[in-house]
Image (tube, rainbow, N blue to C red; front, top):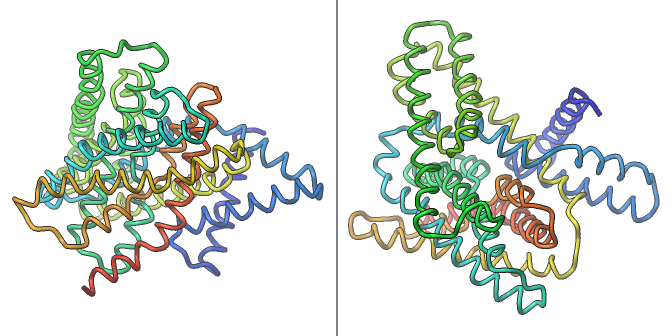
Length: 413
């Protein structure tokens, strides 16, 4: 299958599923697309088991196996998604929540990684499928980043407070980058590419995270200077496109955090660029363009997440481990939210339902699956992939479809 055929197939399926969701299910777009893709995957698997249309399942699996999901997400569309997300975050709103967001995206992620890895190490040993602790750490790191896409759409529909939206969006943008850096550090240790000393780990983390932020700001400032010299929305949109993909590729080549660079660049362009370098007409077109890019890429991502069921190796023990991982991940998320809020409650008041919403609204998505797929081939990889997929499916379908009711009930209290 050629690249053009693959793009045509993805766009056709995504558009068709979007229509079905909008016409019949009326779920939030991302959740609806994944749900429909999961149902279609199950139908294909059932047809394969019944020996009806035997070539159909094999063809679908061949198409999916031709797609490098890890490459597509982590080294392809992630930069655009993070840039689009940060482009619409107001720095003043972010500054008001800066400490709680920083704590959630740092202390919260580290706590989540530690708790999940520790508990799952004992759970897997109890199930008789024990694995080295380093792989439990990898699972803890890759399952910690949250995906706000579906949740933010629901929060807007139910009229959630702006401060809550800012916390969820700001935390998820930064914890994606932090969790990816932690995952890379642990993976380097697991594969023998880095000596597990406190100094080397600290230096690597500092280089990835701080280097990524500084590089993103520098690239964003360069694009901002160019935007100030022109007043043509077509050219300015092209500049933002070049900023996203060129700076992301350059950051990866420099071995610094490309996701954090994308967030930093997006915040700079979305605030200083919007206020000082763009006309009203340009702002309108840039916003519409990146909203559309965000919708299309997320649509494709969630369709692929649903279809990944066809290539996940099913094993009953791994599936049981995935089911147990669901409450473990939720518990880790709860503690990772409680501690930062407790540390900040002496400085400011929080909504009584903030912990519940932030815990239940911490959905896992494509980044977690992509990181699991990036692991070197091994029995541990297949186990981690199954556990990750089970947690992600539960997170998106169950938490995603119930978070709106939780927020509405909280607003009435």
